[in-house]
Image 1: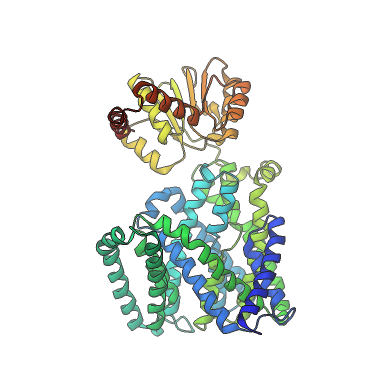
Image 2: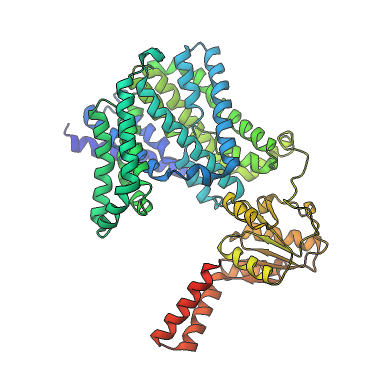
Length: 553
């Protein structure tokens, strides 16, 4: 069979399987693996050009790691906040230790148990980001914390991918290839220096042409992966480090978005090939261990996260929703185990085991995240044990606030400046670690909490005259409006709406004034045009005034 015909048939089956899983609201990665099983020699027997498809699979992995590397700038850990770092590291430690014990009880050797346990710790950043985005929860407290500790996991897996190729079959320290380590250190140092001093200058030149910038990025990512592979090192390390070096350029987001279709196409081949290599005879002995590990990931991982977040003082709802985001293993888990096979640490059946766990947990956790609110309603009375009874108070003891401000981002900072000019005592409620750090430096009273989780009884509202929410979320603003109405219907409630329909609904719920940013912005711009006409110089002066105003925001 010609390779083009073979690829066409493989892609046709993959499209059909992916379509079915899309209807079932499942990530397409499951469809890719199932498509691989369908085209394998045990069913349709379509896949024959293993070597060519394997090359495509390696290119897909290289693109994936290159793009991940671009998202991991040196500032990433600082940006995710202390909570995410503690939760991320704690989850990795507890999951790997408990997973190792389970694997040993199931009869696996130390090396195999270590690989399986570590593979159980990784959660899929790509899948979780997509699900949070679909639910509009990426900006909520649990969403930000989840994204943060998923990035911590990504950093951890990078360290493992760098470490694994240096270890011999028995994981003996005596067997470490010191020459390879030295070469890697030299290459990493060169790339770091290049990223700091050469890349910024090069990017200014090549960015003049979008096509040339894209071609350069692809060449750089695959070139570094090929160089490391040629030197007998890890292709994965080359792609990752190439991405990290590229992360300092201002064009990384543009390049990342343009490369994702390439990544997705070639990565399809990786998962199809993976599914095609699952042998039915090898699957039967590992079904029971796969089910046990699946239950551990689906139930145990969320419990670990809820315990850690409960100890840090978060409410059970925030811990529960954040915990659900680690109730699956990642594409990195499969890549990590595949690398273990490549260096001789594992057998093929372990890859099949982890793949089955991946299919079960990715499928199960997707429904758990999509229907997390319903799940919480059923389970809330049982998970109170993970919540500290002591209520978290805000950072300063003083008279009750005159203004309660939810969200201190771009729009919230404008409100805050106004309240400061009016000398009104303001309590800011926000869940962004960077904003909290900013408020702390300025000595502004804050409460580090998600608006949905806040019980107004935690705050002395006896002197509060105004509640302002700059959160662009209809459910949150509806909740705040109704809660304030129940507490004190004489307090002015100012909230944000994205549409006129939402504004009308918020007014009906008791909001005092609803801000529609697009309406107000357009209205303000129209007034400027009416005042200045088409006079270019006058409009330039208005722009300069606005620029000066923005410096203080």
